[in-house]
Length: 249
Image (cartoon, rainbow, N blue to C red; front, side):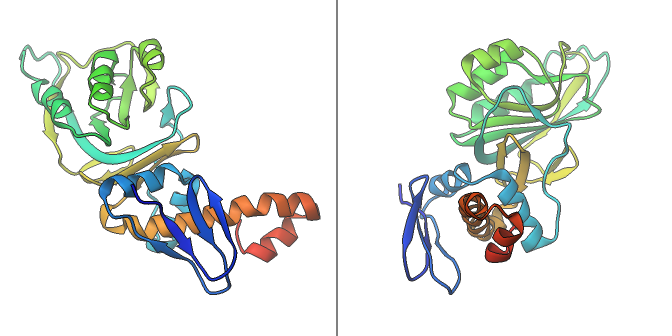
């Protein structure tokens, strides 16, 4: 897998295995040669920087709100594999959720399972069985606009999930599969199949696939500036001076 390079004329630094070169001209990102290396770049940059980069480049909010929380501290990035469930209270159809399960079995490595559960705050969109299937297929993680259950087991196997709540309920007999690999809205953010989902302790951000390379380059610049500022703030004992020097807050 190729490294990423943020290049300028002058001295260079290494952060998370990436070579960062500095000068006074600007930043250039040598774009990745594969989808796998693109997603790996997002795994090494902070979600807050990705969010800032998206806002700067598109003027749009692409982060999920504070209700979307991890079941344990985790960081991941991958390509959205979308699933939508709709309410169908009291249904007795044994195949009502078959499409949801089939979608999991078709997801490739580096997928992030992104599920929209209609009015699903108190319904578990997934649990330990689905998480085990995703982990066995090398999914990066899951993001559920709804609840999650079997949390102790998901923590035990180390499969990262963000959800809007933890609940013991089931979707069986209450919901019906309503589509996979279709555009959805997850916690107020539009998600298309193949978009990049990146998540860490600060939250979840959706990066439109056609903007991914530009967003990654801008996020790396923001990250590098911020990480460089810590030592400057400690040395000068002044955040004002550091912000003036780096132009970053």
